[in-house]
Each structure stands twice: as C-alpha cells, then as structure tokens.
Length: 171
Image (cartoon, rainbow, N blue to C red; front, side, top):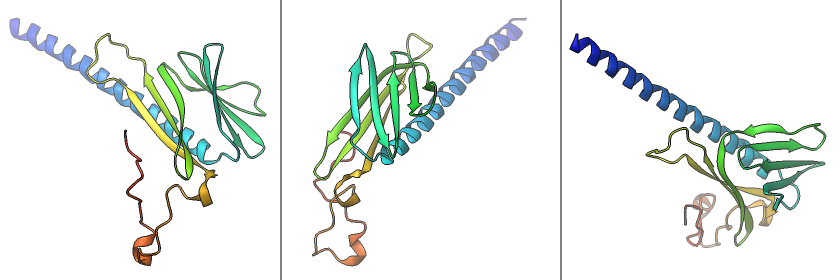
C-alpha cells in the first residue's frame, strides 16, 4: 500500500512539473512571436518612432506608410492598434514589466523592447524576461544597420564586415 501511495504522489508531482514546463514553453513561444511581430513593425517604420508615457500607460507610436501602429502597455497587457481599426487588439497578455527604449548609434537609431511576463508561482528559478532589438530601415544611414566596410577590406569580405566598434549584444 505504501508503494502505491508513493507512486501516486510521484505521478502527480511529475504531472505538475510537466504542466509547469508546458506553460513556460507556451509563454516563451508567445513572447517570441510577439517580439518578431514588433521587430517587423519597427523595420516597416517610415517616419520617426516615438515612445511616451501618459496616464500610467506606456505608448510606442510607429508610422508605417499612411498608417500609425500604436503599442500600449496598461500595466498588465500590451495592446496593438493600427489606424483605421475600430479598437485595439490584445497583443500580449500577462505582462509584468514593459519598456520601449531608443538607442542612438553612430548611423542609426535602434529600438529595444524589454519585457517581463507575469509568473503564476511566487518563487521561480528563471524570470521570464525578454529583450528584442530592431532598427528602422528609414532611419539608418543609407539603409545600413552597420558601418560600410573601409576600402582596404577586399570585396569578398566586404559584405560580411562588422566594425569592431559596434556593440550589438548585451551591454
């Protein structure tokens, strides 16, 4: 009888771990999908992007052609609104923190989106934090995200040139 009780306890413990792992994987997938959509919107920008805070809500305005795409963080959810639509669409739910930050570089202005998802447990081993980085083609010099190669670099290497002064990873 003790073996059956121990087996049942272990089964439910592993089932709980599996459900947590499944939930974490789903959270990561939805965050990555949202991040890729955000990066695509930044790349489509045709004018200056603007981030601001109003009434305890953070906004990011992205002009894209004759439309304006607005991201709104209301302390728990991120909403995406395109001009011409009647109401904003829920873009990402259960968000704990969200920041839109512009970084002025030598030849471009990069945009960074930092977010942390809410957790269901009080103590977690890994915080669900994500950072996405993107550059608008319209606001980089000559459409380049990085510096053009100097003339002394051969033509075969030229298209893979990455200047040593660039910092594209974490600070």
